[in-house]
Amino acid sequence: MENEKLAFHETMETHEIINFKTISLMKSKLMQGICFDNDLKALMEKDVQQSIMAINELKSFYEDARTNYIQ
Image 1: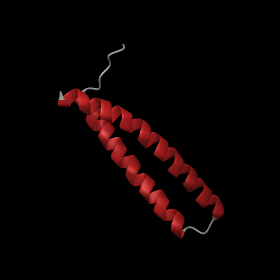
Image 2: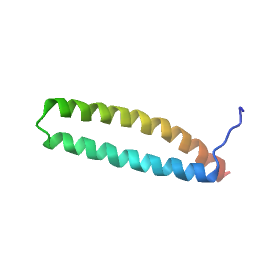
Image 3: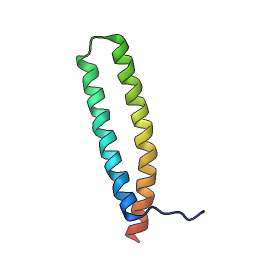
């Protein structure tokens, strides 16, 4: 299984997940500015950091998939 490629529908689903995670990340980041509870702020900051890691991981799948269809 060394030459695995994403199918077209998997590429589109990956793109949709990246969009969803990006919107969630922006919402958490914006909500931190209007939140006064420190525990909730810390939880949202943890969500932001985890979302950034998830987006970076998903981007690698998506970029590999894009090169497969451009060739």
